[in-house]
Image (cartoon, rainbow, N blue to C red):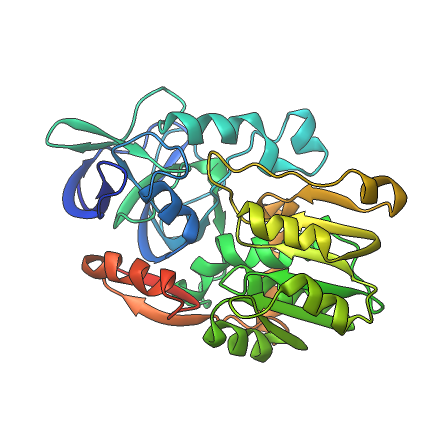
Length: 367
């Protein structure tokens, strides 16, 4: 079948809109007609050559759509189901899956690094040339083929545009608070980066009852949005030193938790430097290939600070996403304000320009 897709042929080039060929789903796979796809910074990092991925590829890992065909052996998903793609496939059987850490499953790492399905082949072609999958999803295509284990059935009454956001930015941000930190009503937190993921960290902190939520960003527009989502203090890092400002806000104590949602060595360092004694830095921003950090070992011992990473909100998506949908339905999770812009596929490069310039919080491609 034919599908309209945005293809990245080489790093540091724009996405090209092409009509690609898509083969039928094979055993254990489903074909999804995407209705919405989230515009996420991780895809931009691949576009700029900062994050490795097999090319040429159809990017996009955040989306929602309808199952239109199923392969042999598929039992838990049927045609007509509304689904969210999960960009980290998991086997459900390995040690990490059994520990409720499916995002770290080796199966998900393999499909991401190879850009192919389990049989070693891609389902996409363009003029007979192989086009790779991205993160096993490739949501920047009107139709895509995904392993059955990497799709999650969702209620049919939730709008596709909002459901798409849950699959990455919401579960990454909210999940990191729920799963990677022990935030309580006595906690103070700092969030470095108030974009689509950062504001969801803020939402998670509000749900956890944090007493102080400090948002740090270089765009005033994003800081104002962070305030609307529950931030109690705002710091523009373009004109202020965030570490000294955090110390001032907390009477020199520092914060209990610092969430880094940018993926840069400088902001990771700042997040660590802003901690109180026994404080914890959680890095959730996706770093580029050559990102390294250098921190003093002294506060690790004498102040018992810690630093860790959190992938996919350290979540079990098939358990956590339904809970987040329930929070949205109960009015406790704000998805409507999170979505700021909609673009047709043909304007996907403009969508990324707006994201980088801080003009949008979270936007989606609508098919």
